[in-house]
Length: 257
Image (cartoon, rainbow, N blue to C red; front, side, top):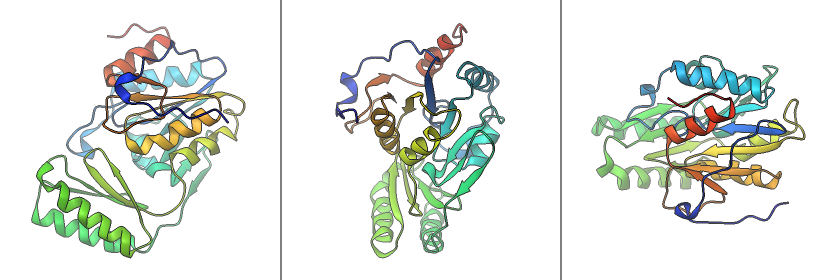
C-alpha cells in the first residue's frame, strides 16, 4: 500500500498532464464537473460537459466512472447517460460498465430523519430537504445562519439511530450504513475494464477523501478541486471547475473554451 501523505490544500501543486493510457478516471459531479449551486435541481445537462464525458470514455477505453453523492438516476440525467459506470449516494448504489446495478438496503430510521429535516425546512423555507431514498440531506447554503441548528439536529439523529452522519459543503446528510466512495472505487477496480489500471480520483469535498484514499492505495492519486479548510490525502489540486475542464479537455486534445 502506498503511504498516505496528509497535506493542506493550499500546498498542493496542479496535477501533471492526464495520460489516459493505463489509467482509470473517477470524477465527482458537483464541484468538479458542475459548479456548486444553491439548489440541487439547479444543475442541468450541459452540452460541453456531455461531449467531454463521451470523449473521455472513448479515450480511457471506458475506464471512466462518476462517483457522486447524487443518485445514479440523477447523475445519468444530468450527464445525459454519457458515462456507463456510476456510483451514487456516496457509494450506496452502483452501476457498472455492463449496466449491472447494486443497491444497499435503506435504513428504516430514514423516515425519522426525513420528518425532522422537513420540520426544520418548514420553519425556515430557505433550507432544502433532499430525499435520496438511501439518505436524507438538508442543504443550508441558502440559510447559512442555520448551520448550528442543522448540525445539532443531524448529530442528535445520528446518536439515537443507526444512520451515519456525513457532513459536506453546506449540507448535513444522514445515510444508511454501507459502502462509501472508497468502496465504490475498489469495487470498480475489481471489474472489467478497470482492472490493472492506475486510478485517479477527482473530488472537491470531505466526502471524497475516501475516494482519494482508495486511489492512492491502488497506486494512483487524488486531485482536490478548490480549497477547503480540512487537510487532505489528495496529492494534487485544481482551483475550480473551469480548471478541471481545461485539464480534462487537454487529455482529449480539445482546446478549452
